[in-house]
Structure formats: C-alpha cells, structure tokens
Length: 281
Length: 281
Image (cartoon, rainbow over all chains, first blue to last red; front, side, top):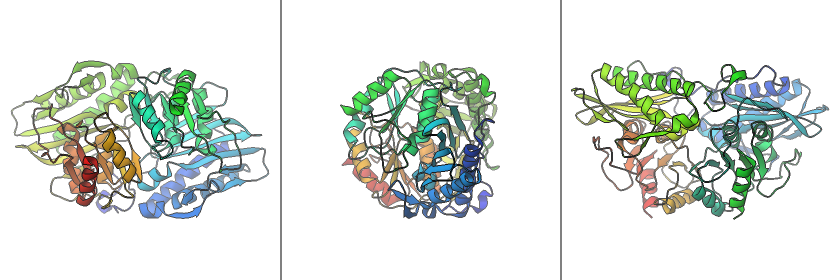
C-alpha cells in the first residue's frame, strides 16, 4: 500500500500503518489485551515521533540494557493492560510487576526494537501466560502485518516446522555476529545453504515454527533474555521443533532479567543438536 | 492476522495472504499491470503449491541461474501483461521479449525467490519503464503487504534516505557472505553498528530509499543482475541517495543478463564511497 496522504509525508517518521492484531478467539484475555495494547501504542508512537525520537535511549531496563523510547511507550501500555486484567507482568524494561495474581504474563513488549525504531518492518509483540512458573500458552504478533502465531503448551499447533534434520542444505536465521560469537557464526554460515539476519528473535523463531526457515540461533553470544525466548518455548515445540540453549542451561522464567541464554530454535532435535555442536566447534 | 480457515491448514504450504498492490494513480499502466499480475500469480502459486513445489528448479534462466517454479509462474504472468500492453520486456528468466515497442519494462519478477518459495515474507516485484535504454520511472512492491515505492527519474520522491554520511554507526543490509566476498563482508560488519541479511535486494534498497536502513551492499560477490538493481537506480537517487557498483562499472540496461554487478545503495554519496572503500579493503 501507499502510506496515507502520501503527498504530505514527514520523511523523518515511519509512514506505514501498524496492523490490528488478528488473534485466535481462545487467546487468554489478558494476553490478547496486552498484544492489542502493544499494537495501539506502537501505532501512536510511529505516528507522533520521528525515527530518532523512537530510538532515543531514555533509561536503563531491568534487563540491564538501554531502554529506547519506543520500548518504554509500548511496555507502559502493556503494563496498564496487565493491571486492568489483574495479572502480574514480567517484562524487559520494567521487570516484575506483582498484582497479586497466580497468573504472570512474561512479555517481550517490542522484539526487534532497533527494527521498530528505524522502520525496518520486522518487529513483534511476544508473550506467554504462566502459572507457577509454567507456560500454558504463547502468542507472537508481527506488528506491521497483524499476523499472529498462537499455541497452547503440550498441544500441537496448526503450523509445523520444516522437519529438516541436517544443517547441510538448511536455511538458518542467525543473530548478527558479535565479537564473542564471530567464529561460531562463520562455522554455521559455512555449513548452512543460506543465512539470514532479520534482527527479531521472536519473528525468526515463529518462522521456524511455521516451516519457513529451518532454524534460528544466537551462536553463543549470550544475548537472549528469557523474555526473548518465552513465546518460542511454547510455539516451536508445539510445531514439532525444539528450543534449546547452546550451553544446555535450562530456560526458566526468572524475575532476574540480567540472566542470559544463547537460544537455538530448530525444526527437529537432530538439527538442534547439530547446530549446537557446530556453534561449540 | 490468522490464515483463513486456520483449522484446515496444509503446513506444507504458505498459508498467509498475498496483498493486492496499492499503487500511485500515475504509475505507467503497463508497469502497474505487471505488478498486479505478479501479485495475482504469486497468490495463486502459494495457494496451490507446497513450498517444495514452489522451490523446484525447472529450467535455466536467461541470467544463467536456475529458475524456480515460482519464478516461472510469476514471470509468465508478467510477460502476458507486457504483451497485452504492447511493450517489450527484459526479465530475469525469459530474457528480452520484443513486442516492437519503443518502451521496455525491465523487471525482476520475483526478487527474493528463495524467501518467496520458503515462506519468508520478504519478496518483491520490482521494475522500471525504459525508453531507448533510459529509465523514466520505477516501482517496487513488497508482495506480502502490498506496500509500494514509486518514483519518477529526476524528480524527488516523497520518501527520503536517512542522510547518514559515515559507516561508523550505520545500519547496513548486506547480501549474505559468499566465498568470494567473505573478507569484505566481515570488514563492513566490523565497521557498521548493525548488519542485517534480508535476502531481498529490491526490498532492502527500498528500505535505504525510505530511510529505514542507511545502506545496502553486495560486498563484491558480483551477484547482481541489472534486473536486481533497475528499480533502485531510480528510487534511491530520487530519495537523495546513490546507487553504485563496487568496481565503478556503469549500470546499463543490457539484454545480456549474464552480466553481473556488486550493487551498493547508500543514503549519501559519502556513505557510498566509504562502503566501497571498505569493501575493496
């Protein structure tokens, strides 16, 4: 589509629409409202603020990384939705917000923050419903299109992974190479038939779940927080795949958001094991 | 959105809609009809065929690379549109189709073929209208969303590049590293603040034009055909940026589609020059 009133665009802003999330009717009401709140807040932010204003680092988050303005605006809207629904929230910037509920939403308010602030149309809301530290359902929403991936823990999803078992010939999404993961990044790139870097873990793991790519990995840079991986912990296994940590650390819903993992989502256990072996060299 | 009738999905197929392109009213009728034909054909192909069937290599194209079934189906629809409109066509698989016109559409029917066949929602129609070898207008359509970027040669576009002049701190999209471009790829990745690989040159150059990323480059692998760069030759300069070849070769509309370039799209001439110097080492 063309942006609305394309004769009067402000080129400093992102002039494309944010879609209304289309969610399965059985989505947990608090999770659904959080997703809709995220989309509404991101839409307003893109409408009102320039790319530079969206990207401005305005605080330090509970995960010990800088908080962009767009992160804060979207998370605030989600926090209000959680409070209205009487559930607790564990979220990237705010940390744990206790509303005295047995239910906690574990949420990445704005996955792919750098994309979201710059206008690269690849960013997501992603979250899970947990009770007593166990996830019961997960939802990922691609904000530019409203496409969503939902799954209930322990039940098969309507989408399936590709079923690929070997890294040779595989299409792999990777976190961008960092100083502490460069050698592993290159080993994976050399073995796979195709690598992509979309800079949005939640969308990339959704693409693994639906079979559009064979795997996604942080090749050992320990960048992931539990909020980055929470939705994939449900959706990828529900589609026949696996979600693992490169170093075998258990993925746990811990209010301490300074903990880090190197997540690997793969179409099959065999592909996950081969990816990890390649990363570890 | 959820796919239609999500209870009855065939997980071997891509179950998301292909959008109807939304085009400016002043788009050249033949170019507009080619874009709509591409979207219609891709929609039908995703509906009827599995990912494996879309990706099957069924011929060798005029560009001397394998033709996937999805490439052929979309190009056939575009060729019919060109014939109906009485214009010539220069296209990736079919080469030059002479309909005795002074006007030739130069088209990449399915940019990001691997994405398009696998279900990674990043693929485009892109084309230009040429007369006597000179492009007069360009159109890029992101097929999953219908978003389009249109420009007339020599006139400013409503979108603008980021204006960034230095590689330090830049967000750069790169073609995936290949054996003959690995060292240059790593040099660019080390200097830029962020690298992405979206595997769709036409969308990545459109993101440069609209200021969502600062630059895009094939770091010297000589992968680009003129059809990959044709639309960006108009849209990027119309937005204030530059489109260059790493080795300074002129970008020419040549019916010989075996010719190759290493395209660089950058927000400013200074950034383009620094990227090329970094790639050449």
